Amino acid sequence: MKINTRFNLLSLLAFAFVFSQSIAAKTNYYKCITDRGTVFSQFPCGSNATEHKIKQTNVAFSDPNSNHVKTLNELERQQIVRNLNSTIRSKQHSLDILSRDRDRAEFNQQQRLKRILSDSETKRITKDIKKKLKAINKRYLRDVKKVEKQIEKLEKKLKRYK
Image (cartoon, rainbow, N blue to C red; front, top):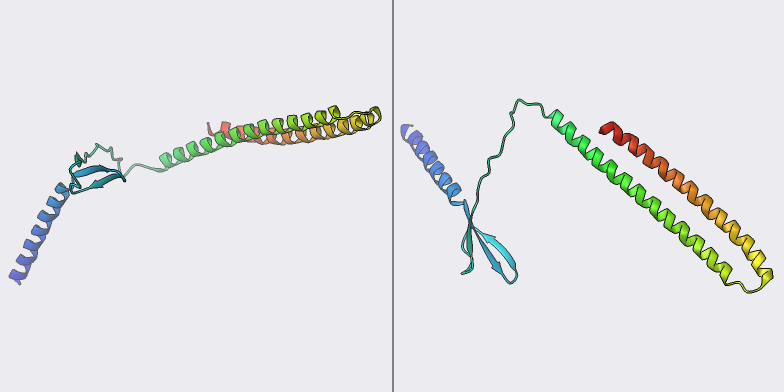
C-alpha cells in the first residue's frame, strides 16, 4: 500500500512539474507573414518568423462578495439608452425620406401640367393635379404626425433613463 501511495504522489508531482513547464513554454508564439496571409504558431514557421511574447495584463478582479446587480442594471440602462437613440435617429431619417417622397410627387404633378398643350385640357388637368397634390400633402401630414408622435414617445422614454 505504501508503494502505491508513494507512486501516486510521485506521478502527481511529475505531472505538476510537466504541466507547469508546458504553461511556461507557451508564453511565446511566432508570427509568419506569407503571401496567403498571416500565420500564428507556437513553432517557427519559416525564415521570416518573428517571435512575440504573451504578456499578462493586470486585470482588476472584483470582490466576489460584491453585488453585480447594480452593474448589470447600469449596463442594461446604457443599452436601452443606446437603442432608444438609434431608434430616434431612424425615425428622424424616415421623416427626411417622407419629405423627399412628397417633394418628388409634387414635382411629378407639376411636370404633368407643363406637358399639356391645349387650354381645355389644362383646366381639367389643373383640377386633377390640385386634387392629387391635396391628397399627397394630406398623406404626408398624416405620416409625419404619426412618426413625430413615435419620436415623442421615444424621447419621453429616453428622459426616464437619463
